[in-house]
Length: 408
Image (cartoon, rainbow, N blue to C red; front, side, top):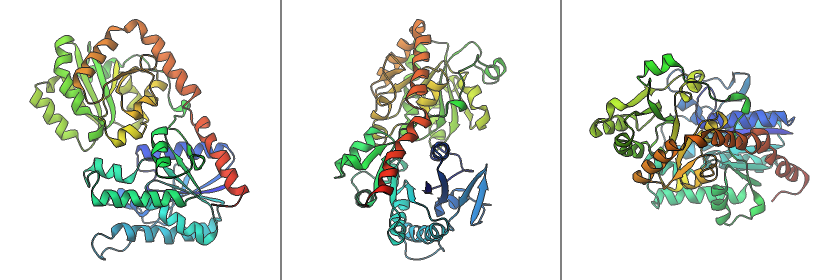
């Protein structure tokens, strides 16, 4: 099987997108398939100054075909059209060279539409993997609002692509239900759930005493979040709830590891609430150091706000926590409910409700006699249900069906 993956961006950039990509590529290689990889012009833009302009690049043993950004200029507002045209031209070149049996486009739809055009010209089946809807991501980034003209046009583009590709993959049941509701038959949509490579994670170790001392956490009970500080993650809700938590448990501290668009707003909120000396912002840490920071945390908190994006899309972070045997509290948005069994593999609270967060965290901290059982159950869940070998097996039958029968 020769599969050409069309990607928004790839390593050396680090994101949840690139980590999922590498995991599924490794799993497909383990199936004996040959994978090839092309990135959109957005990859070059994401690297900023000093980005390579090479047409091809090897990174950590993976070979990528790159697409040059379109020439600047042109009519305003047509940047996406120029980007898609540039990707289409490069994709045509690469597809003619390597002759794939399947073109596998990944979100956003800006990759799916060029893939459709090239696939039609060359007679190659095209599948589209939806990790999130472009229109919902734009709402979270603040570039549009739900129901706006831009939102509706973008949604129409997604639906157009979904109905014309040969098969649709997506990452969770929430997205699958939304896709089927657009008029696609259920048989055309398969879920390849987020998963983890168990070899990348080991069960948590005792906290590093030097690291605890470095961040002033010695003797504290630590609530933690490790990841990107986006608005939808709900870290503002955690800080809003923290004064009440402190009143009940004065030894509590919050450890926020990472960075992102909300970092300065969160620091300002901590100051305004008078809890800045109880909230630790470490900034981004090297990837190799992340597990040491997980080991500092007694209870991980994922307070995602309720919105379309979080209701439909499952995150990776809870799976990573379970793989390492860590305990977690999370809001009951749809994406979390697909992953976390309340009271069994974690604790859920009513999304957007600071008082419910307080109650659930205090209950979790008071139930230490259940911690070992919950840790073991979470690890068992990822070992048996959410490993990449199991997830990637969902590609096999749809791929075979496309190659065996007529398209359509």
